[in-house]
Image 1 (cartoon, rainbow, N blue to C red):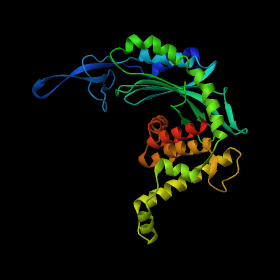
Image 2 (tube, rainbow, N blue to C red):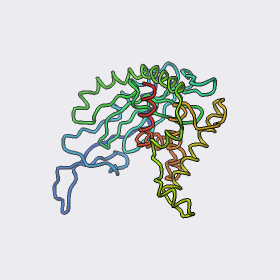
Image 3 (cartoon, one colour):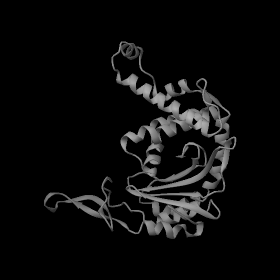
Image 4 (spheres, rainbow, N blue to C red):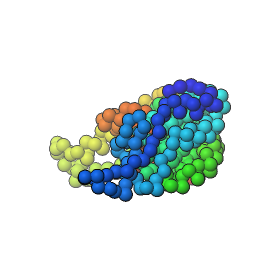
Length: 304
């Protein structure tokens, strides 16, 4: 992690990704030729966890990633914070160091912008997302359904030809920040019943499972439901205290709190058991988590 001027971001990213990625033919037993290629880093060799590619596949380069990062960094003035991560591809986040915070509730529930660029070799699209970092929970969330906050292009043989268009699109992500703040403010004004909200996302144990649990038997579905609900309730109350709200007296909370509680639970509580402690791992897994996506869909339907 480093704080740098936006004009210097390309050099910083290039120094962290000081290697190239190329494809080489894969062979079967006794040097049997195939029509598949493997991807190799110039400094470490074969990239594990990435599928083989066809002869038409053109690996993107560090220069491509730098061009996208430069376009994204133009969304912010002055000094920025830049983080890089390798996970079968290039991942970079860019954010302002202090300015551009937006208050959603009172003086303590603040968010500030962070753009996450995902350029993997896993067959997924090149993606740039304007997310937000929330002080109250130390989460980076990406509401990918909010208009103007996410741009992507498929990683195909035509990627290089489309790069100029993609760079131009990445440069417009700053417009998505204003819309994201408006959506967050609207969600804060909408009320949800948290018990119903959780049931819509996760479901609830059947009457038969609850009856069996009431006899003293351990029923996994009931135990998981109770543990998850308790963890989310604790998170909600902890974040309410941090943001100057009163602790919960019933299950009514704002849609903004409800969404962030699910996001925070997935990033910190649920994933801690699986060892996903690195920031980028937590962010990327939460972005692809079915419960987070469903929570986003539900709260945005309220705000529509």
